Image (cartoon, rainbow, N blue to C red):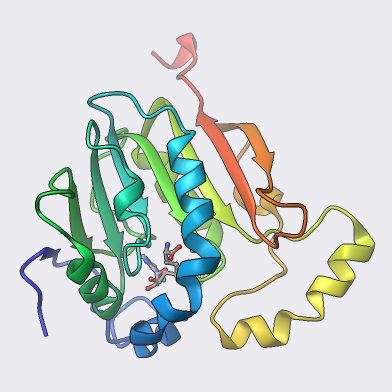
Length: 229
Ligand SMILES: C[S@@+](CC[C@H](N)C(=O)[O-])C[C@H]1O[C@@H](n2cnc3c(N)ncnc32)[C@H](O)[C@@H]1O
């Protein structure tokens, strides 16, 4: 059922997995009702920590790619404007249920494909993606799209599992890959495969706990060189 809080676009995402874009994460649509029960505790605190420490400035415009059921809604300060997009109509329906016009009027929800963002280049001051990058069929393309719509000197913020630089850890974690693929994500992606170091400079890469499978990545989009101006 459509919810009036969600703007639908004529983009490729139709939420039913039958659109032009392969929705490898169909499981999130099918199990959207269970998502919050399983992941709220695991994901919310980390998302909140990261957003609160991002230094979002008054008037900043942000984009969250793959906002899902809206676990981040309460964490964006009201002095910025944020658009949260997701391919899955079902996930967005759950986000819309959490959406409180009094507390979240600075946020809008739209159904859209993160790999084909319907925004001009250099639109946003910051672009975030939490637990999404390894869920899409082409992670590099997703990060390239995030980079494209980010303003020069703006920030990309990604929380995701990336394969460990330590071979022993990588081997053990890769054993889980067949299991995590059932959940729609892969354990095998390395950060280096998705970050284009000509357009992005890595500012921080950290974990919020030593045991966490997830890495927080903050990267800044390069300013155009004077030769390009
Ligand atoms: C693991 S969930 C993460 C949701 C939310 N960011 C969170 O941390 O709770 C992955 C989300 O990515 C969305 N997704 C998958 N492919 C996408 C795409 N091509 N464009 C936008 N969202 C996508 C799924 O529908 C799902 O909501």
